Image (cartoon, rainbow, N blue to C red):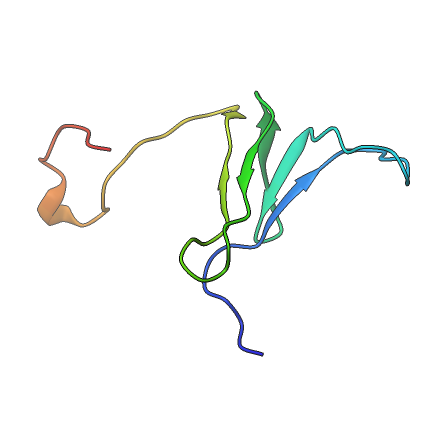
Amino acid sequence: MTEAAGAHVEIVEADHEPGMGVVPTSVRVNGVHVGRLAKTPKVDTGDGRERMTTVTLVLLPSYLEIKGDDSPAVRNAIGFSA
């Protein structure tokens, strides 16, 4: 079996009791804690053929930084695009 490309996302409930439903409180991406959840995550498991699994997360960041490449050639560019 080949390894899929993409991130390893873990949606975690602290102190989860086995047999109970999961109430997620935090998220780890590739083993790194990325923040607390602001809303319940939306998970679409896809069908494995035409649609891939997607996870939509709304996080409560402790710090937000939006920046471009660190190259000196682009330091004078100002703006934001999504």
